[in-house]
Amino acid sequence: MFDDTFKDVHHLDLFDWALLTPYFLLLVILACYGCHRYEMIRRYLKHKKDIPTASSVHFETLPRVTIQLPLYNERYVVERLIEETVKMDYPKHLLQIQVNTGTAPIAAAIRRGRCRRVCRAQPAS
Image (cartoon, rainbow, N blue to C red; front, side):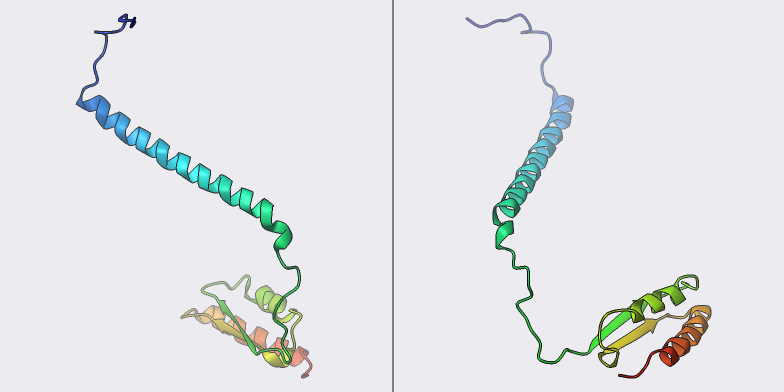
């Protein structure tokens, strides 16, 4: 009834169990992760038509917004970063830009010079 061809060829010892137990445990964890990922994609595809396209919040007056730019030894990108931040489509009188340079004196000097030029170039609204 049973095939005993490999009966005495190999028996699992402690080393085999020490290798196989974490291996199969990891396989179970990865299988759970894969099932969860599949379920998340399935739910997204099922409900993506229900996602609102327009914002549900409408402001009578726009809020004041502060943008923080953390810079540390970024002397090559600081000017371009400030220029692109100022180009945002938001009322300039409600937009505050904070440039945090930490203790980098070179970046602080570049920031001060660039901010003066940007502030002079922007008309007050």
